[in-house]
Length: 246
Ligand SMILES: Cc1cc2nc3c(=O)[nH]c(=O)nc-3n(C[C@H](O)[C@H](O)[C@H](O)COP(=O)(O)OP(=O)(O)OC[C@H]3O[C@@H](n4cnc5c(N)ncnc54)[C@H](O)[C@@H]3O)c2cc1C
Ligand code: FES
Image (cartoon, rainbow, N blue to C red; front, side, top):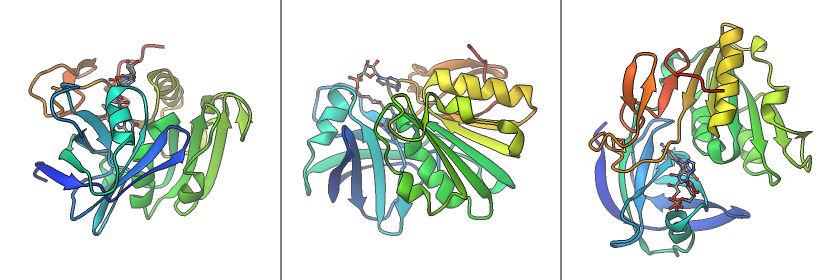
């Protein structure tokens, strides 16, 4: 799949929860679940484009789901219909959907849910149980219901679902394979419990990035099979390769 650099018009940019936006662009796009695009909606500053995962891809549109964190995502949140945005992608390896079979757990923390919606949608032949952890507000759960056999939710505040962390209610024993995206502390716990239970696990990392195309080596991380760039060799890594910190 060849990545392209294009300038496109925003079709819709909607706040679906406080500080969480869904950006829709019409057109014909490519990309596997777990791949991402570098997005840019400004001229010179900030200097770097921002990596955002493919949230959904259908005939005729691509969607990105993002959380406003700083300067770049604040820019995105102010985009109006028909304004321009530059996209470079699809980038990264993505999940190998054809190799994922059986009973699958998808575990997400916060905005880590963004790429996993498209992952769940593509795993048509699998039995999926979805674990989603949030700080206080819950989003996207109704849409996930279309693809998941079971959904478990947690919030730090206890406003919805289990009060506490999603890792507290996750039991890897029930699954053939575990897919995970979220804060690194959460992913370390999932990696550890999967390792203890001999379960295959893949994680999608969201490290800070500069070029996004493997040229600057700014996103290089140590793995059990040598140094890897998160943007080109990842962002999806097999649990066996990842060095667990916690
Ligand atoms: C492969 C990949 C896919 C991603 N997919 C999504 C997605 O689908 N939706 C989404 O909302 N975000 C996603 N991210 C994270 C997103 O790229 C960052 O939140 C964004 O670049 C922040 O830019 P900013 O200018 O708004 O914030 P900045 O001004 O650059 O930073 C604001 C604050 O956020 C922190 N921060 C910035 N980037 C990260 C990061 N990567 N991880 C943790 N903290 C960070 C900074 O340390 C700072 O405290 C992804 C990242 C990667 C690498
Ligand atoms: S961000 Fe430049 S090599 Fe990954």
